[in-house]
Image (cartoon, rainbow, N blue to C red; front, side, top):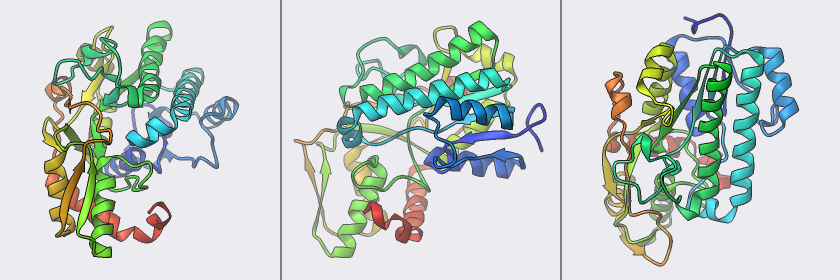
Length: 326
């Protein structure tokens, strides 16, 4: 099976959480001509290198899943790296895709593009409606720039570049580094380490009352392939000039306290949980509105408990490789 048009599909960021899931989804779809490059082989912040790659390989479709990502601590500690690297990746890949005649591109963003005070659930129209969350503002600005790059190239050059904004993600291949991970892998690592070391308490940042929505990365990958396979007219009809992107989420939210309890149960830690409200926890609530995408026919399939158990099993199977991030 091949995508519309003849030629390879390029997955940028194939070793990351999202890119690896997209790769799995493409293989399941029967697409064999897939291009991947490691960071050592292709630095996406190097404009000349990216231009040469696109000119030589001529992909027909591009999944732009490459990004510098991290949790609250990482975003707050390395703001310059987060804004610079993500801006450069988006600008270089999108521009090179246009220059080389890519038929279709999908840019992956993040729900942090929305102001924390916007009405819940966060709709696509909430973009640029107010100030961003300070702890990840640089990353969010870079992702907003990616949306606007796609939108602007479509307007000026008639390209077919699409954008998808996922909610909080988790699943096999996640980043479990205790310094840079998001909440689910951070809690899995923390509870597992406490279990192995025989500790009687795990500390969780914040009050535990913040609510978050989570989506399994394999559900996101299925949404990515679904979006890329939509006819151009269908995608355009589902978006508007000011909202050229679509949200993707599970539609369910959970308190961090309940999430921590669920992960404790799955890991098998028998000690107590202590919350530290002096540590940052981000906005009090964040759930996105995915109704536009769901009206097109896509639905998530993996519930949170099942997905967390699967993620913990993956973590156990890959502990040796993850040891350096412990």
